[in-house]
Image 1: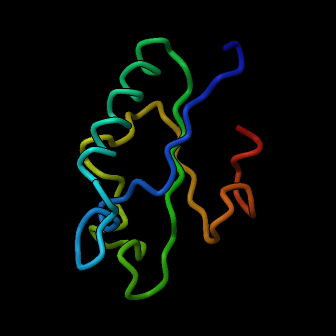
Image 2 (image 1 turned 90 degrees about the horizontal axis):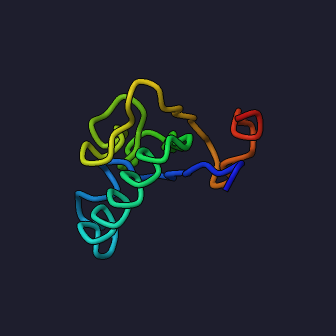
Image 3 (image 1 turned 45 degrees about the vertical axis):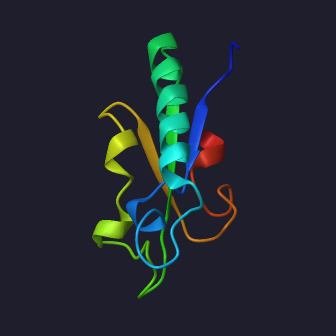
Length: 97
């Protein structure tokens, strides 16, 4: 597990609220939280991918829904990368990290 890291992708508040929330969102948050805790305890890098939705989307930048869900929010030493397409590598810094 020498080159291991945890990627947390699109776990933004807007995806868990509103008229069309993620299926079994609370269970998903619980599972991600447990995995996150383990990776942090091992000292592995944690990288968050944050989608930059368009105007009116649940993850529109600058809105509350754009924020990473508070139950799994990044620590100061963890990386957050914004993306503008479904591909987390397309026009992002992910490959460099």
